[in-house]
Structures are given as C-alpha cells and as structure tokens.
Image (cartoon, rainbow, N blue to C red; front, top):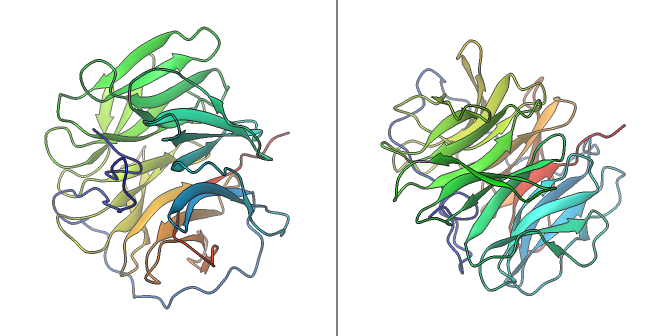
Amino acid sequence: MGGPPEGRRSGTRRWLPCVSLGLLAGCGSAAAPPIPPAAPSRPPADLVYEREVQGNQDLYVLPASGEPEYRLTTDPATDGLPRWSPDGRTVLFASERAGHWQLFEVAAEGGEARRVRVNASRELQADISPDGRRLAFLSNAGEHETLWTMDRATGQERALVRHGRRSVLGNPHWSPDGSRIVFSSNFRIGHQIYVVEVATGRQTRVSGLTSGGCEPRFSRDGRRVVYVSRGHRRPTSRLVEHDLDSGKEKLLVDWPALNYSPVFSPDGSEIAFSSNISGEWAIYRQRLADGTAWRVTTGPGPARYPDYRPRTP
C-alpha cells in the first residue's frame, strides 16, 4: 500500500521516496548550488508543512505576514501530509491518532481536529476539490489501494482508479477546474505520473516511460504539472515541470540531494519543496523567474511536505 508521503510506511519516520526506472531524458544537468540561505523575503502565502520535533511529527504553519511559525497540531500521534482547503480556512491531513491512518481536518488557527471519515481502512493523501464539494483520497478499502472520490455533502463514494493488487498510488491533486486529478502509480513499470478525467475515468500517462515520477501537483492555471523524477537507485532526485499541451519538460531543481514535495505558489511565481541538501530535511522556496532559492525552515527537526494557502477573495 502507498505510504505517507510516497513510500513512507506507517509507524516509522524513515523517508523512502519512490524509485523509478531510468534517468530524466533531455533535461540536462544544473550546477550544484550552495546550501540556500534563509529567505530574505516573506512567502507569497502562508505555508503549512509537517515537522518532526523530539520524535513527534505535527503540522506547522509559517505565516506570510512575517510572524514566526506556529504549531498547528499537538497530538502525540503522527500527523502529516497537509493540504489547505480551497477557502484557506482549514487544513486537511492524515494522522495515526485513531490507531491507523485516517483523515482529519483542523482550523487554520489550530484547535481540535475533526475526523473526516470513520472506518477501519487505511486512508491518507487527501485533497479537496477547488469548489470544496469533493474529496480525493487513497484508501485500501476493497482489497487494495484505490484512488477514491467522495461527495462531502452526501458521503457518496466512487472508486476512480484501481491499478492492481500490488500497485502503490500517491499524492492525488485536483486540477483548478475540478475536471481532472493528477496522481502517481507504480502500475506495470516504476512510478509514473497519470492524469485521470474525473467524469469518464480516462487516464493518461504524462511522465516519460524511462524516467517516471511521483508527488505531482498541478500549476494554478492547470496547464502544467510539477513532479519528482528519480532514476533507478539514484541518490538524488529532480523536480520537473511538465507542460500538458506540448509535452515539453523544464528542469526546475537538480540539486545534489533528494528533492521532493514540490508545489506552486498561488501567484505562480515560485515553488516550495523539501530537500535534504543540508543533511536534514527542510522546506525551501525557489523563484521560477531566475531559479533563486531560499531556505524556509530552520531549528529543530526535519520539515517536509509544504503546501501554500490559497488566495481567497
């Protein structure tokens, strides 16, 4: 079954990113940068991420206002994989506080988390549709891991993607218009990036067969997908931007490290991601116009899996 994040297993803090066959073709190689300094400017939106401190993983928020980060969840169980709701009022996340991985939601200011679904299945890696009406998530209900959608008002469920008994799916993310979901799967050959049409269930592979990928996210205009590309047993990984219309790819991050969890900012000017280039997992921002990068998180414990708070009217 898929783990949080891609390949990380329940009951452990070990990071096991996905591995796919081959190398990213045609992307070239960027010069190794120095470890980026702390960010000199405020992020364009609040950032939520998971951070482990003294063996306990919780969610933290770095406000765009320039105020210090604050701890969003405080349960002794593992909390992770946060995603902002479309209105920016809550954060959806996965937690083991129920004794197994289940979905929870907490207010942006913190407080008691609400359990989104109650069952005996292992459920995680969830994303709320742009209109707030539907949920996409991974669950092992029904024999093996499946990408499900659920109507939040009625609770009606739909098994959207099943790839086989041993397939590992990962990181579903809705397109801005709510018509598609991008996700990863190791169905047939290595981890690959797929886009599925929600109405029809039609799937299209967008990653190169010999390069593969995981942890995909749509751009804010829905025209591009950013994802992680890691060749077979490579000690490093790349962040790649894929144009869905032309199929062209652009290399965004090629640091000599494991670089994961990319996400576009609401204004499309930058990405946030996690990297262990310093020897410990931390959150970074990178401006897309010129590739300038800054370290966002410092202090105790590794930090991973960032998400920008959406812009709201």
